Image (tube, rainbow, N blue to C red):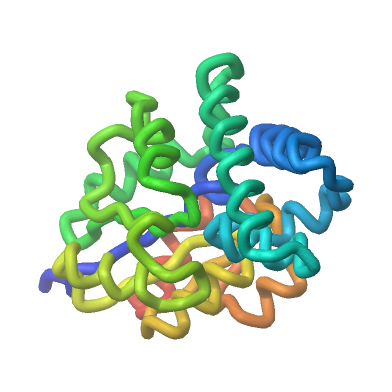
Amino acid sequence: MSRPRTLVLFDVDGTLIDSQSHILGAMDFAFKTRGLVLPPASEILAIVGLSLPEAFAQLCPEADAQERLLLVEAYKDSFASLRKSASASALYPGALACLDRLKHMDDVVLGIATGKSRRGLRHVLSNPDLAGRFATTQVADDHPSKPHPSMALQAMTESGAVRGVMIGDTTFDMQMGRAAGLKTIGVSWGYHAQQALRALADRMIADYAQLVPEVQNLWGEI
């Protein structure tokens, strides 16, 4: 008997790729450009996954809307330059093999829900290892910031899935998935503390080899 069509929805930064050095570098540029003191790395990584306006609202609560807009533009300019001059962010170990395994499961469709812009995601998906794998791609340009469920709900609609699971490294991913009625799996190698993820995730994994069995375990199918 065939299983229900299932959306496996991935976050990008801190989940599929390790973009920490690019993010911190772009933040350093943005804050220096505006003559502001750069927050600690731990504070910056804590907002990864949010849309840029929301991220800067949390990092700079004292700044007015115009100043935050200028920070957003400086960050985007820096990230665009980094894409040209720096090596691409690496996939986490085991990610490609996991995606290959999921690709060959008839009942599974893959998607992305990320705080990146469309331009940023397009750059990530220019990697031949990732190109063409995802049936639905949701970005910050088109939705309210995570943890609002809009990205996950639209991904479900576009994929034609009847059930889904959100894979991510932040509490924002877990909250978004839950709000959209999806199952949630937290990854231990990303940017938010494992303890915070465990409080919200249906499952936690320590490496990509565990992902497919845990997805099937969510519905008692293994």
